[in-house]
Length: 56
Image 1 (cartoon, rainbow, N blue to C red):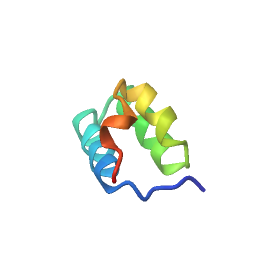
Image 2 (image 1 turned 90 degrees about the horizontal axis):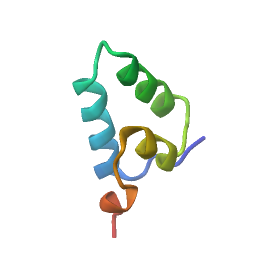
Image 3 (image 1 turned 45 degrees about the horizontal axis):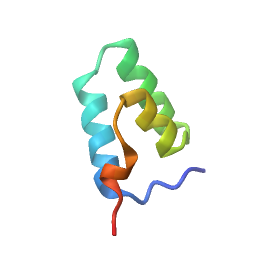
Image 4 (image 1 turned 45 degrees about the vertical axis):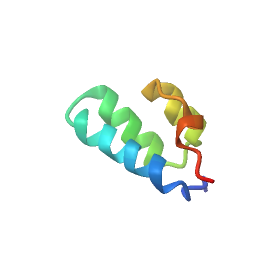
């Protein structure tokens, strides 16, 4: 199971899924998120930089 401990990134992914709801892109990101795809893979599809969401 993928690590889902980055709360900032989780919020961004969930927001992205809501914004793209009803589209193929939104469903693809949702499926990736729910099925344990790495953050890096999801960020690549969303075209965002995961490093911007690193928690210190």
